[in-house]
Each structure stands twice: as C-alpha cells, then as structure tokens.
Image (cartoon, rainbow, N blue to C red):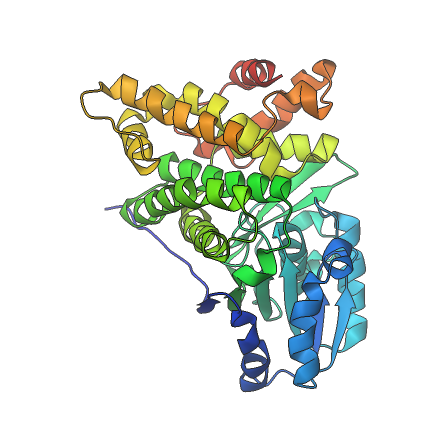
Length: 385
C-alpha cells in the first residue's frame, strides 16, 4: 500500500475581526519582537495598519519590511533577510497575499538555514534541516492559501523563472484568517485571487497525487468558491461572502499543498516570470483551456466538479458532464471579469515557444493527470493567445 502524508499548520483562527487574538498569541508564545513582512500598497491603504494597531495596543515592538512586489524576487528576499537579521526580532508576522507570505517563508527559512542564503538553492525540495523562524500569517487575499501550505514561489529574475519551493519547514505556526482584512480588495484582485483558489482546488482534485483526504478538501472548496466568488465580486463589502471565500481558499490549500498541482500552474508561472502578470489572472485565463485538454484523463472527477459548481448533470454522459464542468468554470471566469486572451495582457506571440519550454520544465507540470509534451504546452498557449 502506498504511504500518504498530510502536513497542516498547528493552529488557525477564522472569522471577521479575529486579528484581535494576535497580541495574546505572541505573548503566550514568548516572542519579544515582531518583524512584519508586507507590501507598500497594504501599508498605503491602511490594511497593514489594522494589524499593527493590535501590536501597538499591546505595546509589542516591531519593525516593518514592505519592499515586496506582486511576484517577489530573489533580491527582495535577500533584502528582507538582511533587515530581519538587523532587527533582532524573534517572530515574523506576514500580512498580505501570497507575495508577502511567500517572501516571509523564504526569509524565515534562510534565517535558520543560512547555507541557502543565495535563495536560488531553495528551488524544488531543498534539504533544509531546521524549521523556519516562527511565522504568523494574516492573509489579505482569498486565493493563495500560503498561510497553510508548505510551498512558496520566488522569481529568479536573472534566469527569468519562477522557482517553486516545497518545504515542510516553512509552514506558518499560526494563521489568522480575518475577512475584515480583505474588505478593501478591489473587484479585479478579488476575482483573480478567487479564481486562483478555484484553480488550486480543481488541479488539486485531479492531480496524480490526489487521494481521499485531499479530494474531500478540494470538492468542498470548489462548492464554496462557486457560491461565494460571484457574490463578493458583485459586493466587495459582503463580509459573509468574504469570509466564505477566506475559508474556501484555505480548505483548497490544505489539499493542494499535500498533493501538488498541474499544467495550469506550470503554464502560469512563466507568464509571471516573463511578463509580471498577476498569478491569479494567469491561472484564471488558462484554467478552462487546460481543463478541456485534461478532460478525457479525469472524466469521473469532472462530473464531481460540475456538481460542485452547481450544475445539474442528471441524464448527461460522462463526456457531456465533463464539458459542463469546463463551461461552468469558463462562465464564472467571464462573470467575474477575467481577460479571455493572452494578447489582452500584452503577451507577445513570438514568446510562446519560450514560454512553452518553461512550462514543460516547471515543477508543477508532472502532476498533471494527462502526460504533457512540449508540443502540447505550445498548442495550449496558442489557444490561450
């Protein structure tokens, strides 16, 4: 019998306003000084300030590092690592979407495993020996689930590639999933991160490594995203829908973190590396196209996806139900305003071959349920173009 493994973080809080527990948890765990990792927009728009206010009220000292962009780079990790070492902090509080949390993970891992200070050696499954500096993650988007995964992604600008790093030692010790921190997300970002979460759930459900426990998570996540994403895009101040999406993306993360992803992510990563396209937008645009390509390899599971998306499949053949799943995902992407073609994102047609090579080599691609050739990847980019 094949051995399975599941890794989850040790504690998480959910619910609007739950950031209030942060100070007590820091004190209870004996931490003395906080190193905050966030981004400049979250500082500018006061989202980080909602968390900082909790620390101020409890008189907990902190320093802020906010030099993080939407696709964080090796350079930013090195800058953050130096700032952490100079700060004298003993805990990292990551406030943001996947970019600040991923940056915090890399900083935390390098702080305790300095042999990986070049950052690029962390790509893949690095042989780190020590757990990261303790990380407390407060997500401000409902998409990446970085607060509950063992993965992080850093852009290697020199080699123009996104490095996917997989390390059980990087998982945050505590996640505080507060929907109130997500209320200021604009509609476009809400849609893109929500579709990113749906991509995680669908790819995690059909990936080669999927099994009963991950399937349970992913199907529930698909159901919740189909219900809550249109509502929260239509009304960004809908706290109930925000909280629904916050929980749904976390559930999706519990699954895919442990079983892997597939070709959608394999193709999305080069788009982020070459064009700095937001990860959620790239995933959302590619998802229906790659689903169509994979349909024959996962017909039974596509029927489950259709049902979770709210489609009645009674009387349909397996092939018709699979097509209904693809159509439902595409309809949701259109409804929430995702661009439909790569050319609309200023991707150049002459770059498609180079993108295909990068996608073929990406660490996520082997998890795809259908074996992918280089020619397949190129043809799919052409369809998306």
